[in-house]
Amino acid sequence: MINMDSTNSKDLTSIFSYIVEQLPVLIFLIENGEIVYVNRACEELLGYTRAELLGKSIINDLIVDDDRPKALLHCQRVMSGIR
Image 1: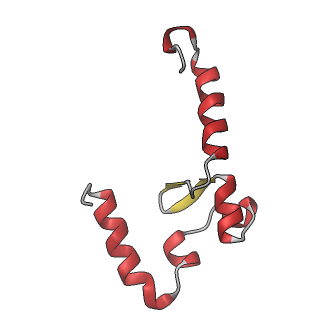
Image 2: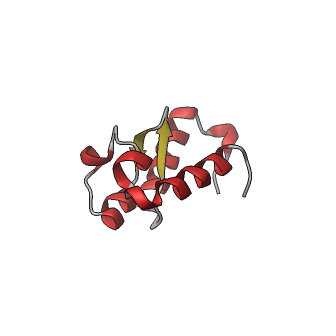
């Protein structure tokens, strides 16, 4: 448990960064279609280094051609809040 009143934003950022890095699930952040953050699990499960993933497009660089339409539809649904 974290007492939010006594924790400054820098400490919270460090705490959340640590937690995200320890999770055994893929976590990545995308800005304008490009990967801007990946956690350690992304490297381990996908077999790419952070440097190889950063700046890439998930759709164009990591999804095979035949699966792109389905992946695009899924991304559009996620972005619009549809499950």
